[in-house]
Length: 402
Image (cartoon, rainbow, N blue to C red; front, side, top):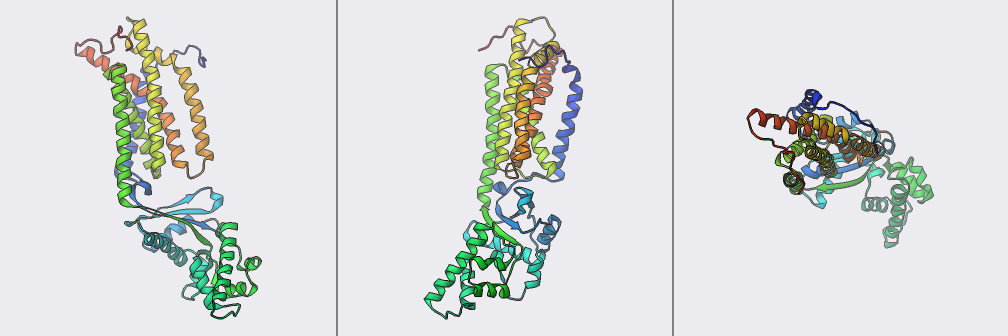
């Protein structure tokens, strides 16, 4: 399908504009990586404890970050998790151990931090001995009810069994039916004995937040994942270089790999400029865009090589321009449809897919651009350099496909 008919755009004539555009974004990304945000790695790579907290009301991120700083939790990012309407926040704590105690410690650190520095109900109840019903564990709640004995059952196995059933009913109502948070302790009257509800109203409080999940990644695992991610990227580039060397000429492979490196640098730089963490899913997106950009570049290169066999006296710059214009309809259609797909994923995919989809959005745009504005001009520049040195053509017109 011909989308543009027969365009006659002088792409090579705009190479200096392309170079300026690439330099601006590449240098900005490198400066951010070196001097500003650095390389923002997710907990997958640096190791740590991730604590996901749900709030009863829309959280104030400024107050949350202030609370974390007051508690002395350094390098603990505070980011939204999921849709804004869910009122969920993800805290990441540095951690050096992978054990059950480390999970409990991470959970306790966030609960104590928010209780002391964020929750108004928590501040008022500190030192009173009241129970935080939003974050109480099953065993703690059973022990508390058994000790208080609101139904006056006495110390017996029957009392323990009774209060265990009451605690399970309360926690099921709270965690399963209402996502970890309830509006009022009085609402528990539908699942608990009135005496138990009355005792909770007197001796417990609702902090307005609840820890929903705790995960931990050890530093050794994080380091291993970093090395594997870097190796996967480098091996993919090396494999593509060897393939293009065999399939075309070495200069084609070098130009394509430089273009893909350019795409990766700008994409990673964009994450650094936004201070958005790079996770395993982002690495998967980067590897995807490497393959996509390389495929787009090969389509242009294949048309250049085909035209070299058909037209031997045309200047290489004019031939490259013509080849790019001949593949332009295909490029716009395929890249445009792919871009619309990943853009929809970015807009509607939610916070979990935000990094993955953002990498693809940037990668599709830059990958399509580099096939035209980076890889193709490199072929012409290399040919001109050889001509000035009095050497033969690097892109022989008579070369046939292997």
